[in-house]
Length: 134
Image (cartoon, rainbow, N blue to C red; front, side):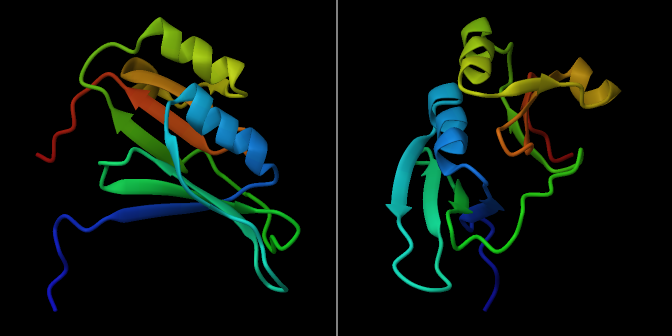
C-alpha cells in the first residue's frame, strides 16, 4: 500500500489543563471542537480534538487524571500556520486574552511572523509567509 499524499495529520499533545488549552486554541485561534471524550476507566484519559472541519489536520489534546506524561515542549516544538499575509491585530489580542504568551522564536520566525506559547508551553507560529515546498 502506498501512502496517500493527502493523508490526514493528527498532532497529539499532553495537557495539564485541558480547559485552558482548549480556550487558547478555540477562543484564541478559532479552531473548533471536533470531538471530546472523558476517561471511562483505568488507563484512559480525557481528550479533545480541535481543528477546522475541512482541514487535513487536527490537534488532539489529552489530559485528566489518567495522564501518564507531563508536557515537555521545547523551543523547536512548533506548529506553524502559513497565513500568506499580515497577522491581524485582533488575532494577537485574542490569543493573549485566551491564555497565550507571546515568545521570541529566533531571528527567522520573529522576522516572518509571531510565536505564541499555549498554556502548556507548546508553540504556535503564525507566519506571514506563504507555504512553499521548493
